Each structure stands twice: as C-alpha cells, then as structure tokens.
Length: 338
Ligand code: KG4
Ligand code: ZN
Image 1 (cartoon, rainbow, N blue to C red):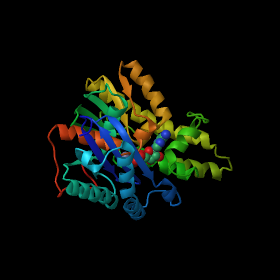
Image 2: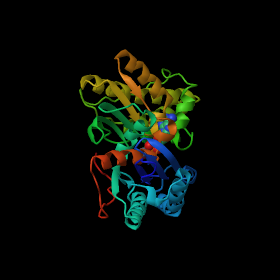
Image 3: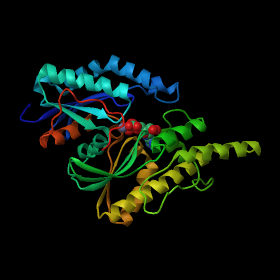
Image 4: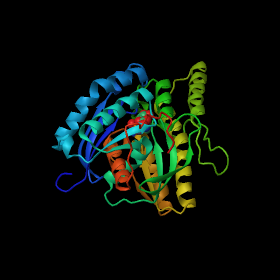
C-alpha cells in the first residue's frame, strides 16, 4: 500500500513478450514495461517456444526491476503479485510464474494467478475508467478467438471459440503466404487499405446456424490456391486486393457473430481485447454495426491490446478484492480454460 492505494506488481510471459507492470487500485498504470522478442522470432516467421523461454529467463528480472523503479516503489510497497499462469507456451509461462512465486515468497506477498484472456479483457478497465461489467467481449489474438460473456469482474463465460486457427494466426499465415513478413496482422491491416475488398472473394465460414464458433484454417489454403491459380494463368498478384479480400472474409464473420451474440444476450456493450483488436478495419466495421444496434463499443489503446502486464495487474486486483488467493503450488497450465 502506498499513498493509501492498493498496488499490484504483475508479470506476463505467456508468449513472446516479457512484461511487468505496477498498477494502483486496479486501473491506474504506474509502469508498464514490455520487452518484445518480435525481432528475434521474425527470422523464423513465428514464435519459437524454446527461444522464447530462454529470452524470458534472461530478461524477466530486469523487466521487473524496471517496472518497480519506474513506478517509484519497492517490492515492500506492493500488496500482491499477479501473474499469468495460462494459457500459453508452457516454458514461457513457467519463467514468469517462477519469478512471481520467488517475489511472493521472499517479500511475503499474496500471489494471484491470472488467466491470460481474462487479462486481455481487463485491459479495457484501464483504458475506460467508467467501464463496468456486464458486457459482451470479443477476444482476438495470435492464440485465441473467443466470444465471452462477461457477467462481473471475475465471472466470464466463453460462448464460442475457434475450432482451429486463431484470427491472429490466420493473419500471420496469410501475410507469410503473401510475402509480407511477421507479425502479419499490422502489415495486412495497412496494405489492405490500398486494396479492394471485393476484387478477390474468399469464403465466409459461419459453421452451423447459431454457432458462435469460428474456423479460419481454410482461408490460408484459399489464399494459397488463389495465388497458385493466378500464377499458373500468368497473371500478376495484386497483394493489396488479396489482403483486403482475406480481411473482409475474416472480419465479416467475426463482426456478425459478435454483434449477434450481444443483441441475442441483451448486452448493450461490446468490448474488444487481444492483439487483433488493434485492427483498424475491425474497429470501423464494429463501430458501424454497433451504431445500428444501439450498442456501445470499447477497445484499448494498441499498447494495451497486445500482450502486456498492466492488464494482468488489473485482473489480479479484482480477484484479490474478491478474496481470491493462490499459493506456491500454482502451476502453469498451457491450455487453461476460462
Ligand atoms: O495478444 P497478442 O499480442 O498475443 C497473443 O496473445 O497472441 O496478439 C498478437 C497477434 C498477432 O497474430 C498479430 O499479427 C495480431 O495480434 N495483430 C493484428 C494487428 N496488430 C496485431 N492483427 C490484425 N491487425 C492488427 N492491426
Ligand atoms: Zn495475448
């Protein structure tokens, strides 16, 4: 406790960002340090788990020290330690978790395990100080695509998810096929602006009627087949058009299902979270649909969309306030359910 405020030190290491943050009263960011490994994994076209773990191990102590220093506090000032314990890459998760446990034990602080997706949703509480549950959340990242009914600060119900690739994964794969680089999401977002979304049409996969699940694995093949057939016919590939066509096919489905779920379940707010929530076309399309149905749309600033520890600190705070505590037996769970 400092200046009468409850402080959380949070650690996140589920994928390729080593992150630590200090949060006051759940929503006030005192520091938010993110050490990204994107440059390292770029040369492999994706995250290499083994390499990610090693870099987390090298960086985690520096990142935590920096977070405390920038916040102007010491470990003794904090009231709890929040940490992501799943889902994610097991080796990567273990580094953050072991670090959090070490601090919890050494400084005698409560340990609070946080679900990574719950953290992504909570990024919105930091961004929008007035936002309160209930609402419908769309969590879209490199690892997840979920429509989640958020009933209160600590109760989330997953209504649908991807049956194969996550939305971000589809963006990254298609970007690779188009020779754009990694991570593909922001690159497709940008180049699709120069293309015509109706020039090349890809299949919209809605699955069974009423289902809130997704399937994006077919679209990479669709893009590959299109490229091959155009090449065989001796035609030039218009990369912006293909990127725009791909994006339209993915986003049409995501927007229709998310808005449909909010309307059907009587929610008046939609909250975006996860790396793909930074996508400009998704925001535009959702703004339009939300306005049509009288829904309010919330999303975090880009730095709070992609992986960070501030969001984990926020989630940990609300669990702490509800009396939840973990102990040193807390284990990393790579496929943790919400
Ligand atoms: O949440 P995040 O940082 O990590 C995971 O938990 O997966 O999300 C990373 C994903 C990557 O697939 C990246 O390509 C995608 O988010 N992404 C975007 C954009 N910015 C990041 N996808 C589409 N448009 C963007 N502007
Ligand atoms: Zn994430």
